[in-house]
Image 1 (cartoon, one colour):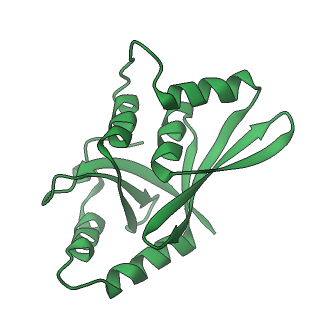
Image 2: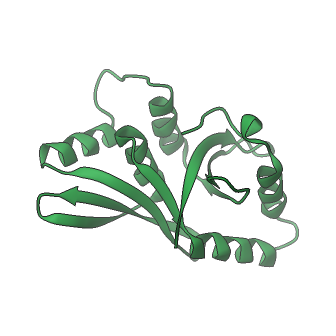
Length: 161
C-alpha cells in the first residue's frame, strides 16, 4: 500500500548532514533519507522557487518528459535494501504508463518540479522502523527518528510541500 507523504528539508542537528524527511499525511510516521549536498540543494532551489541561469539536471528531466508528451504522475519510494532506498517515477506517456527506477533524491527533486505527489510504500516504512530497532545502540538514528516523529509540523524543517 502506498502512503502519501509531505516533504521537509532539514540539516540533522548533530552532524549537520542534509536530510529529506518524508512524513505521512495526517500521521506521525516519518522516513528520513540522508542525501548529498547537491541533491538537497536541488530540492531546496525548487522549494524556494529559485531560477538558475541554466537548467539543472532535474529541470532537464522535466523538460524531456514534457517534450516527449509525458507527465510525471507520481513518485514512490518503493524499496529499502541493504540500507539503500529505491524509488520509482510513474510517468503517463503516449504509450501508456511507464515506471522508471530512480534514486529517491532524484525522484523527489523531479516531483517537486512537476508538482507531482510523493508516496512511500508501507513496507518501506515498516522495514526502516525494524532496521532502526536492530541497529547498534551507539547509533543515534533511532533517537532522531523519534525526535522527528514528535515534532509538530510547524517546527519540522524550513520547507513543506
